[in-house]
Length: 302
Image (cartoon, rainbow, N blue to C red; front, top):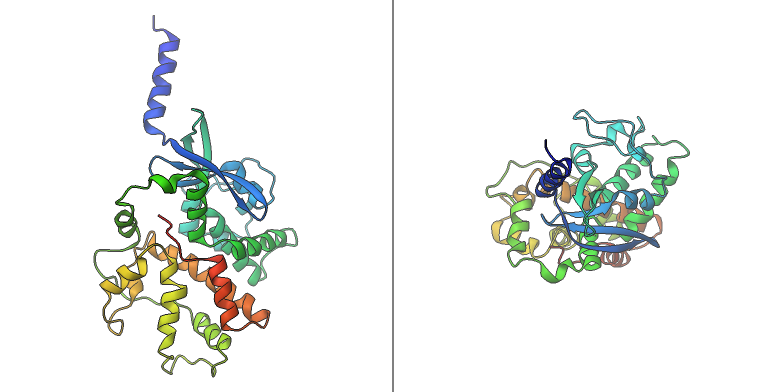
């Protein structure tokens, strides 16, 4: 007769082999809230299940709805009003991740990038007038989070909180490039909305922007500064090396579809939000740049 204790140990051993483990843990602070987080042995940065609810001031409970693949959708995204805004990238981020904590127990969490991604979702829905009076509070919280946190910034926060930055592998930069940059150029596709350029013109007090006219040559330098240089350590330098002539190809043509473009899109939404904020307050270009440096500073995020 088989000993049940042996079966139990075997089951736990199998789970341990296939379940990622936390190697570092810590607490990040966003808007005065302390949110537990971990780094897994595969390099993923994770916000614990409870943290995501605390960040948006929502009661923690299980999910009732699932996506087309059967994955549970967090309660704060279950509303039918939000469904049109759930991109494939966001759906991937909101999949619950099971891992073994430092205490040896099983835990659940989400990829850290889910926080700014959810923020952008609510901000877009509010702009389109799709939210209920109750959901407007989520949009308000989202705007405040975006003002204090950029998509790339949350990775750095977790690395600092957990101490992971002290032991990053030396080949982390190359590994990061492999995730966000392709080996060959992809087909051109419009990635920069006209509003981005229109807002630059307004902040600089230039004549009205027109797509039929050549932009000021310095706009390209501004884009390198507030967009590409904020995507990660040495990303701009690598893109400049790969794109010596930007009149023939664009830097964003090197970005990967699964990681690079979503990263650019999320950061672009952050910049658009900051542009709108600056314009609504009557601030000029220099004040806007200070805001960008505060919210999305240039830093090593690997």
